[in-house]
Length: 367
Ligand SMILES: Nc1ncnc2c1ncn2[C@@H]1O[C@H](COP(=O)(O)OP(=O)(O)OP(=O)(O)O)[C@@H](O)[C@H]1O
Ligand code: SF4
Ligand SMILES: [Mg+2]
Image 1 (cartoon, rainbow, N blue to C red):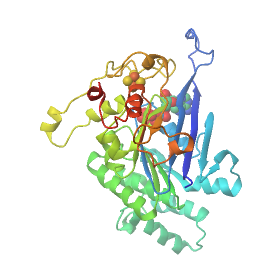
Image 2: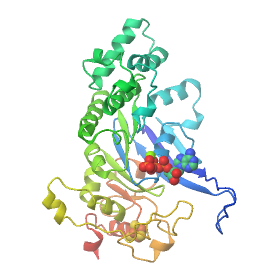
Image 3: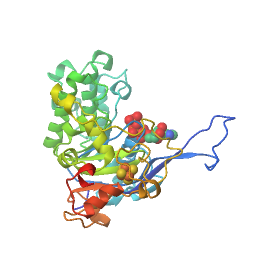
Image 4: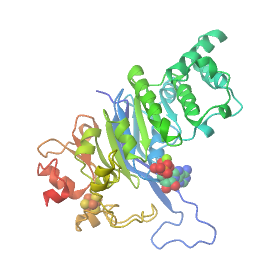
C-alpha cells in the first residue's frame, strides 16, 4: 500500500549564528550548524494517527514543517502519495500543499486579529472551493463551525479572535484547516496553550473529525500522557535530539517500551490514582543536563543520561532505528518503515534483546 507520507532518511540542518567576537569551539566548523532532525525515516498511512513526542528542541516542529512542505529537508526525501515532493509542480504541488494542513500551537498568533471568523473561513473557501454564491460560502462556514463543535455557529461567525477563548480560537484554526478538504493534519502542540479543562474536549473533537473525514493526523506533543490518550489506536514515535529513538503502536509502546528514554518518559506520567503514582517506579536519568545539538555525545546521544547505559557500543556507535519481526529477525528497507511491524527501536541492548526474541522484557529483567 502506498503511504500517504513517507520520509526517507530526512535530515534538516540549521546554521547557528555565532555572536560577533564569540570564539568557535575546537573541532566545530567555522559556521556551526545543528541537525535539528537527523536521519528520520517513517511512513504515515491514510487515516492513521502518529504522535511524535519528545522534549523541547528535539526536532518535532521541524519534522512537522517539513512534512507540511513549509521547510525543505537538507538531505533525504519526502514522498506524498508515493511522489517525491521535490518533483511536484503546479497542480500536483497545490494538491499536496492543500492536502497537508498544519495547525500551530498558538491560536492567538495563527488567526488574523482584524478578520472575523467568517472572513477567516471564507477567504480559503472562496479561493479553493468554487461554490459561487456568498450564501453558499456562509452556509459552508457554518457547517465547518458545527464540525468543530462551535455551536450554534451563528453565535461565532461574526466574532473576532479577541472575543473568543483560547479553545474557541483553536477550534476556528481547525475549521480553517478543513476548508480545503485536507487528507492529513499536522497538529503541532495544538492543545498545549489551551486550558487543561478543555484539552480533552478539543482532543475528542480532533479524534471525531479524524474518524468522520478519514484524516491522517501527525500529533506533535512534548506530553506523553496526551500522546497516549490521542494515539491509543495509532502509533507513537519518540524523538531525542533530532533522531527517532522508538516507533511503535501506542499500546505496545506504553505496555512494553523498548528504549530507555521512553521508559523514563512513561515513568514520569502521573496516574489518576495518587497511591499508584506514589508507588510507581520512577526511573531516574543519570544526568539532568540536555546535551547541546552543537556538540552531541559520541555513540548513542542519550548515553550521558541513560539509566541503562552499558558502556561499549553505547559510547561509540550511533544506534540506528531498527524494526524486528516477532522472533528477532530484522525488517529491512521499505518494509521496516510501514505499520505492519511490531516496533522499532534505536538502542543497542534493546536491539540485542529483540534479536534474541526477548520482546517484552525490560532491561532489568533481561540482565
Ligand atoms: N529556523 C531555525 N533556525 C535555527 N535553528 C532552528 C530553527 N528552527 C528550529 N531550530 C532549532 O532546531 C532545534 C529543533 O527545533 P524544533 O522547533 O523542531 O524543536 P521542538 O521539538 O519542536 O521543540 P519545542 O517542544 O520547544 O517546540 C532547536 O534547537 C531549535 O532551536
Ligand atoms: S544505546 Fe545504550 S546509552 Fe543508548 S539508550 Fe540504549 S542502553 Fe542507553
Ligand atoms: Mg515545537
